Image 1 (cartoon, rainbow, N blue to C red):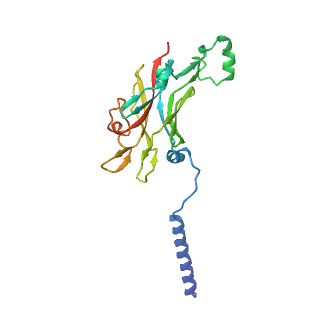
Image 2 (image 1 turned 60 degrees about the horizontal axis):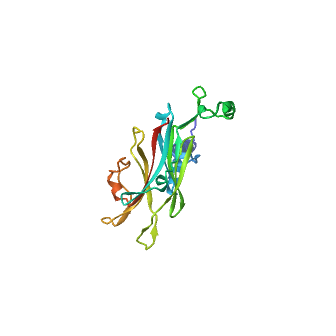
Length: 241
């Protein structure tokens, strides 16, 4: 039988090329488009001046408490007197709303309107989380919010203080730090988040806002002493009588 060497060679080359192409296809590096999820937006929101911190208060859920939402301002380490507190004004919410908070003749109507968190226990709505957030307004103002989940929120405009920059102008440079949290001390102020200005570092010849990732509730953290202007957002929890 005659063997066509050229045919064999062509067949061999075809098989070799097919194997090489397959290997390239199997090992090819590629990029695929995917649908973004909410976490992908967080860096963009932070860059645009949005920040939020959340705190679990579910340990309060078995009883009704008053939660006073408080914003304190400090300049050079000293607290500035708060007008609302001086005038006896308080912004207080409860951690839950009960059916018994309303006259009994309205109960059926309230239940029908729903939703009701736990009808057997008579709980209309319950907050298990507090959120502290910041959003840009204009250069000299920042909007701060303390949101008691499912209940209500305090929103307040924070006045900022500009600082000189090497270019000769002035800028508003602020950032946030959460406080260490733990057991709630009833009747005492619980700081949640500090919102403060950068400070100038003479040795490094730059403005900075760096230090501890979480601050001590008694303001003993080293970086706090360097911040010339800051606000502390927090709460005071008391048992409802």
